[in-house]
Image (cartoon, rainbow, N blue to C red):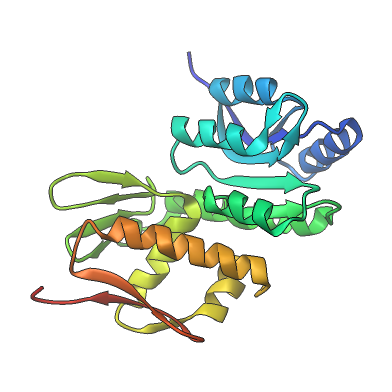
Length: 236
């Protein structure tokens, strides 16, 4: 049986916020399903093809982080926003370390989160109109596929990437052996340069380093106070 296709699965237990936020997103043209429990969210995720998850960390029957891990295991590379009243640094870093695209603290501005959603879904849909040369980028013996969000080595081994991982790696590949300014990356992919976004970028760079171990000619160098360089060393 074919899965229902939706843009956003919202898992939020506060009735007023869930109702208002889901209605707002539908008004803006998105296909939205709202669930108020971890169990309901998990069942919906299994039955739907979801472009974006928005998960409240504190749910009445479970932890949003644990639920997200389950979902990522089922669908590696699944884009996720965490939505929470928790403002502790450790909570935010945990959410970002799971590969979340963003971590949004309550209360939030709906117009601001709408822009973040549109930016992410625009990127996710972009491969449909890209040329072949834009869909696949070669770096060393690896092939980055922006349609499948995957990285393949010369032996045919494939690693799945999140949307944000693929975006960042594509940018580094297009500027290989050149310094890419950290501030520019934050502004382009996160929209601002605050502390937590900086930590999120560092997490993503660390994940990309592990992925690039598939080709030992490649490595990402951190330039303190400046940014990053993706090196492709010939003859290694």
